Image (cartoon, rainbow, N blue to C red; front, side, top):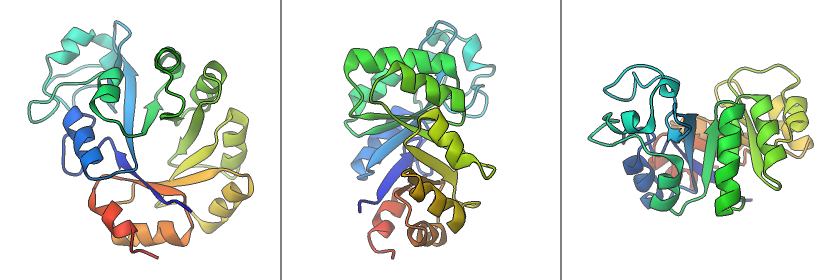
Length: 227
């Protein structure tokens, strides 16, 4: 069974997160896929940024949704990098991409790009929000979807299936064997996040996860030898 190593916001442990620099390095380091986050700008662009505000990761301040793409472009996202849009990432790397959407509006914008560029084979869509997962599944036939959770109740597997998700991405620090077995029993792929230490990687292997999301490229090399 293939064990996937997914670069978290590129390789954010060693490069500015969610930047072209980070994504290119993730690909060069051999990550199996690249995870990124999408927010809509004021003028409807799919800006690649994790937070709803620009404060933490740029030299600016205020909400992403309150800025036009031109305004976002003027910000320094680390080491002189600019805030990219989704289609720039598609053109900068060839790797499979896991795109996390924050709401239904982002799902609709992403669906348009996916349909126009034929991205179903390449792009998997994830979200913490059940309704966003269900929306993208309804809009893009055949899309692969992932429900993410940091804290969850006993019904998380049922939630994923109800939303049409094919996979669960769960916080490795709270993931138990019981939940892993229930996910597998329901036919769901299971990804652990964020796996940044050898101990967390060994746990992921012991739980027989399908893959992990990590901040560090070294986890991929370690994963080849971790039983």
